[in-house]
Image 1 (cartoon, rainbow, N blue to C red):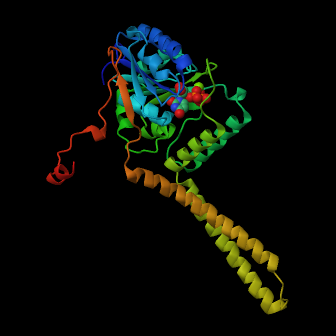
Image 2: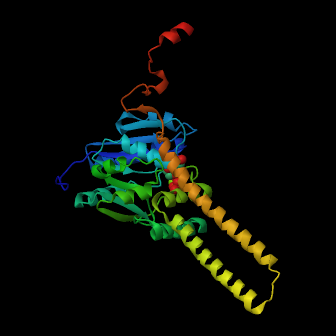
Length: 340
Ligand code: UDP
Ligand code: MG
């Protein structure tokens, strides 16, 4: 390992942005201002995740000194994919992921870099402000981290988000994972490496509001659980086995009752109630199986996780568009010549 204490690493900050036209300029300037003091080599990569406002235009017109590259998606793919694209387009020896809305304080960068110099490969910021959040988020995150620690093979540090520093080794490891269902919190924990958390309190959002509705948060949590834990499937087996045992015991009871006490019970409500109950349990667990099947289907299709429509480097006047797959010249066959 190189001596990190005196090293001047190239630092790349990646910034996923979705409808952040109002905030992105000041966020990038602020990041650049802090980076200048940390290292002579740095740049910023903003990933425009299919914004419907002028985010991309604002980033393209940022002053050249801010070293900001724009990677624009063809549509909104979600923050997890924006981060993946950022990692892929980052040149740094160190990559730091920060939100575009200014909630992640650049003041923390120096502390993160210090930890890297001490020998940590991943330094993640841990939120300290759960008390001021809504009941839904607080309880939701408790249940989520509880479920993950019950059934997962990995330990996800609670309250650590995407605001983190990663050494090049970690970035390469993250990029080597081919999965399309990308639940970043799980993936960070899965790759391992020497990691440490540092506390921080997110600043208030400068503009607009959070892109994460309750439904989106639940979806994200469900992706996390089904991508990193087989706990729901095990639960299905456990419930199935317990119910079968109960049904067996009940069967014995019915037989004994019939043989020795000869009292034929009408039993209609019991039959209906138990049928409905078992049908419900079966449907529920078929649904859970379906969830895993859907994830397998997603992976098997082998589609790219996202489509980049444009990459604009800070010194480029014009946006560089990647050639479309269909624009490749395909040699015409004699048959086509006849008809065209
Ligand atoms: N974001 C994104 N794609 C999305 C939603 C959000 O790239 O589909 C970005 C957003 O621009 C911001 C970061 O992810 O930089 C965090 O989003 P937000 O502030 O809405 O979430 P919160 O801070 O409430 O967790
Ligand atoms: Mg935010």
